[in-house]
Length: 179
Image 1 (cartoon, rainbow, N blue to C red):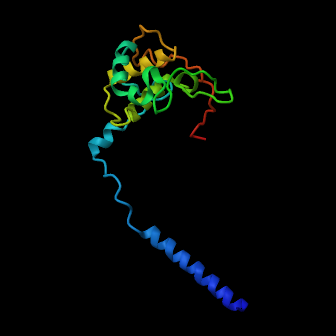
Image 2 (cartoon, rainbow, N blue to C red; image 1 turned 180 degrees about the vertical axis):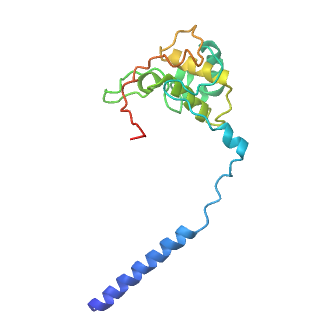
């Protein structure tokens, strides 16, 4: 095969790949999910910041949180926050600088308000967004209690949650999105 024929074949193959890429780019999107309605989109439009801005009204204790945790969370995360099929939440044996670190709430999570935010957005896994604000404060209080970061008598709310100092508060590098 001469050089001209080889080059022609390569050009043809390149053209075929480009056409295939164009066809895929113009293909209809897969029919995954359904569009959000205005009311549903508005219900998810919230942000809780590390300093507690955005925390809603409500309150909860570890005692109330334990009941909710056992009903909604323990099947995945295990009794007392460990031993389930999902991520371990409490009971870290190894620090983050150990060879095999445990990434529990007590060893890894930097801000208590963002724990509330995460639970609010993502848990329970089978029905995210289904817990009331009081239930969210209670589960957060129970998880902080399991990690020895809250007293058993604590009442968490928008004022008492932000001052809780998480052990890994300074373990992340901050990024200023405005820069």
